[in-house]
Length: 194
Length: 91
Image 1 (cartoon, rainbow over the protein chains, first blue to last red):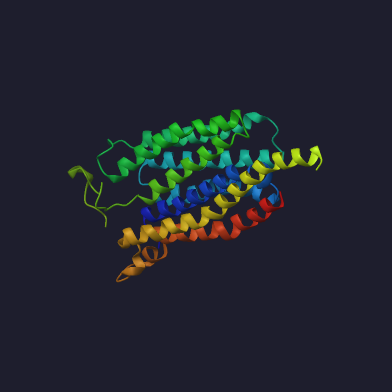
Image 2: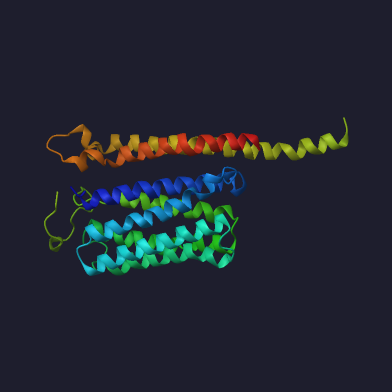
């Protein structure tokens, strides 16, 4: 009854798409208008936290090697950390601006986890290509949350984070075992599952 | 006409213009996302399993990426963008 791994990626892609839309909307209207309704201030940080929580069952049921398990566990932990830090800052429970660095830290760790746990080159198979693409997107994209941590009200940094999430969503939606482009490129990649 | 009113007019005009652009962008985000899903379904109909549902299991019928994009766009528009537009109008 477990969904195929591709479907889990697509569900997370939907989550990142929504996250991107939330952050883009906040960047467009500005923090003041965005936080006019209290629930909206908590919307995307709680969403990040929830996605981190949901990453744990993915780690438990969908990883078939230690390195995959560690990577998924790392994503779960840093997403929960970044979401919780942002929630604490919004609520006022956390006062130190240093907590804002939880988000760029999460981006960096996530990107490195993608790159480290993919042991094949870019064009080995579709998933390898996506892992490299996702990893570098996160590592380079960490510049945006870093800029936001240094200048919290800078709309361009918020828009940049939103765009990184949208790029992640597109890449995750593109994850398929069998596809006309970048399906199985290497004969060593094994039989397609579907 | 007093000087005070003239200064107010000049200052409020660009602000109103920016507000109008923000309004349009927020109103467009959700529909654009949903439209992207529809275009995707047309370009890659094989990714919508409902169009060829023979012998497919539950997950292949439940999780269909282009439809997820349409649903995400619609949900964002209804639950987030609309209340946000109301708040934007009040500013």
